[in-house]
Image 1: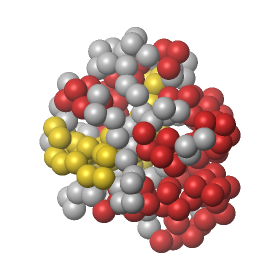
Image 2: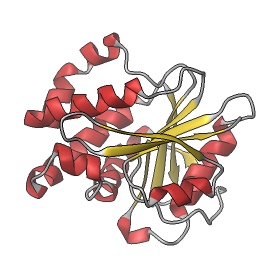
Image 3: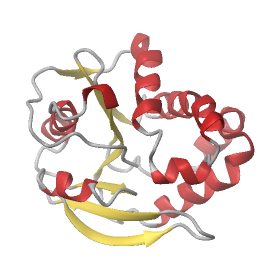
Length: 206
């Protein structure tokens, strides 16, 4: 799931592996980056509820990705990308049970819509092994300066070593051109059932 991008220019030299002590800074930044995201807005229509829930949600996702791939952040926390390694994209029953209480705490009454999006995403993941760009976001205060592009590019350089393709989905049509500039192509589009948002699936070849 992808938040707003800031353009593909910019290098990746200043992107680092995210540390545990950066959790609060990163999750607060992602809450700002995703505040106007269509999928987030569908889950949390009330802006005041959204502002309260998003830091909890992204803290949950930050923790969940700790041992499943790679968490990257720019030097001063302007942008971040969370990646899941090949074979780790889908949320297994064990992970769901282990995170049930935190999920209820993060989603509250919106847990039904949250699960609808999660199930739709899982249903459209490729069957082949791939690196999954799970979360990508850039602080609105720093958009347009290449930080988002650098954070994505750093993940491609570190994770996609020629053996596996990369995959993502985005609910923002304006993101498509950004990812095409990084070598991704649209492989399909789909809509979350019962009035949910539209997503585009994109794949970058190995």
